[in-house]
Length: 139
Image (tube, rainbow, N blue to C red; front, top):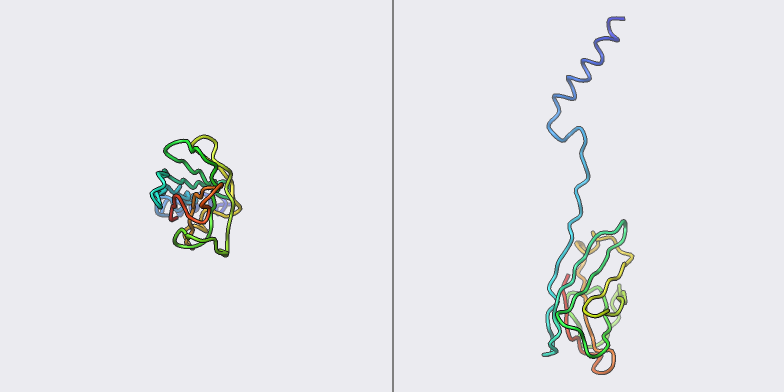
């Protein structure tokens, strides 16, 4: 009977002896990423790309500094630089078109994948000169 009274006090003493935070270690939040969208080929197109975790997926938000006068193709692909010709990257996602000055797309990649591989977001003119990137963000 005496041991039943002692056990709660022993457990409490052991918990108090643990370092702060060791009792309930919360998972560290995955940081958002903000990357500049840099002008290429004197296109005048620049802005930013933001990545945010959404469950096991990633939200990609592309913002350009001014509304475009021509349609644009936005692509997220594996690689370390915007290519001036279309290749066949190992991983490629077509992003939603710009709606005014922004595009928001949910892609089926966890945000951690962007830390282990190189990715690029590029903006290309959808009507002509499509083989040349107008803007590029290296993620």
